[in-house]
Length: 178
Image (cartoon, rainbow, N blue to C red; front, side, top):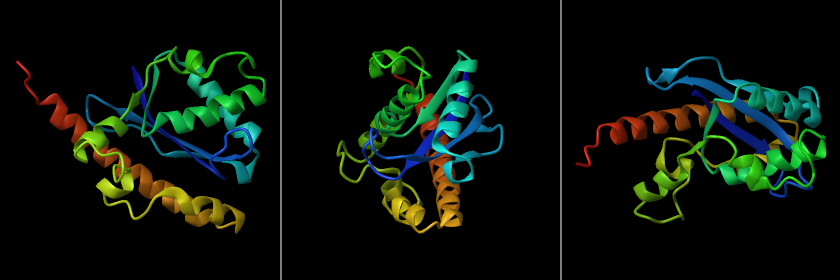
């Protein structure tokens, strides 16, 4: 498997109407429990949505073992699949779940819910790590063209995610359920 931290930022919550403004990913060395590459941030404001979506689609489909590690993959992949269809990368009639479940992925959100005493409310990465806040400010920053702030948010979010992921991984790998 080729593991990648994957996340997106969008200008809203509606994948049919709102734009993806960033797609970020970073290769991980799962066995060594470390980052294995730089954080790549594909930025809509430096090109356009179609270009960053196409670039990510090409990466995603170039390696059949590309395995995204994410939080709340439903949100991100709903956006990505909608945009893949919009730009003709996958057929319009393809069901979201057919594309999504035709590949491996890891989502740590369920584990965060368990850590949060089985409560969904308060189980966000921002609530359970040292991440300062959630991404709800991103659309406003995007509208105000505060791109440096968006990039700093993304960098801090990736750091918080990866720290949480490797802690979770270490604890789960050391469990003996026999």
